[in-house]
Image 1 (spheres, rainbow over the protein chains, first blue to last red):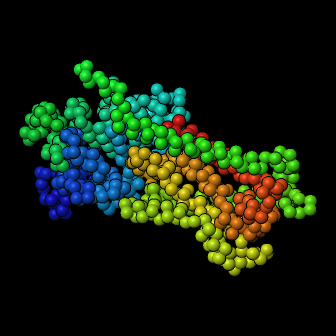
Image 2 (image 1 turned 60 degrees about the horizontal axis):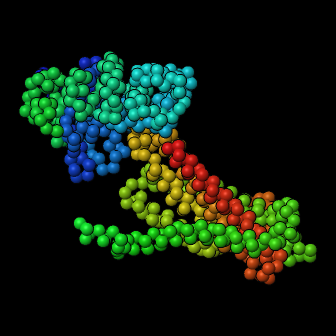
Image 3 (image 1 turned 135 degrees about the horizontal axis):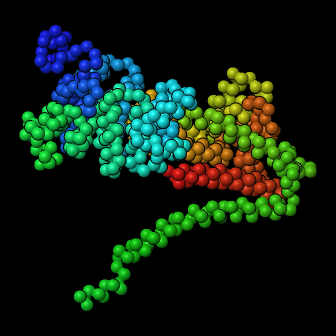
Length: 272
Length: 305
């Protein structure tokens, strides 16, 4: 396996575990398996997520996409019965050896399928993560809140009512609020889990534009049910099916000449 | 077609079952109102003559001289009111941290079987008869207070004892209610906060507790109601002495235990008898007010959600 030390010295064409430089993958997944109790939902997943790319994951329901994301920010810690096998490295660090999981999660933003406006004001929703991290100065928080809301394309709509409850916003606005909140922790990696499920098409397009710009600053893993969304956004895409990663390739390659017939069938809407 | 239309006027079994069921549940529902009004009417009517015509309100609320059998008789309830209030306040000082701690542990940390066991045990604790708590106060807490604190009054049955006993008595029901309030916080809130890198305590402190606050307030108020209304355990643990307490180790007397201790010795319809019903009215109004307040807090929260 590539994760063995001997493989590092061998001049292999396969992705070798290079030291954590700018060109090294941000996330390396090797032999990942996830079980809930006795039920395996994901097995034998090997893939890399490169720096500053949008990495798409598509596949039908129960393919293990969401579980994959949960493993990336170690949510297994708080999910009773969830067991993760195999190795995931983040910036070269093995996730299993990290002593402060909270610090890891602060570097990884997550956006869930349904918007979760915490029962706080709009301002406090976005300021929560910085506050948790110990930032207390009002001016600094103001700046973070405005920057994140601007990046999430929400600032103009809410700047006059930052103190009203975040949970009173419309579905699409709440989802952008969630994205602003995820950005407020200044993440290196942003995980999006079917973020557009409860968002209207116009807002979805605005968010997609923003994601393309964000690629300059961070790395995005995008789980989506909409294959066209993956095609619009993702640099590379993985196809998950029944708990396995069928293939990973450049998105255009996957859509035009996938190696596996099942991928083509799914992408062309013949099942799933 | 025409033949089958005859059924339209026939009340069959299902119709009658429905009718009986409706009458039955209506009776059950209405009985709550009947009883509460009936109790209020009874208490008021028993004490009304004295309360309206012979009771001095200024004496009742400002004097500590409760001497219904003295010459002349005096009916100063201040010490009893203060007794009830101080015991209740002390009970809450003990019960709130205890019950909230237990509720947070059960709701946020305990898992699976352990959680179920703890809930069963706490419900069992809530079912311990109050006279048992009274005996614990009399024969366990009292000697401990005498041994460790050596109170000037010399007695171990006092404000502190009654406060501890009532706090322990109110804690289980408060735990159950507080845990319900925590359970009502959507799991997605916790996940969202965890994904932001919040620690377990930060999730509880910043997200769960604020959202559960109305339910937690209601839990406290119902605990207060429980403490105000408790009788026999207070009678056994408080020392039952009429005085305004100046220290934790002073014996005190509560409204409820005064009624329990004296009612049997009074002549039916006498001023003393009626004065005890005046205390009853006061208690009724206090607990009624507390419950209304709890109800409004919970309702208000539901409207906002």
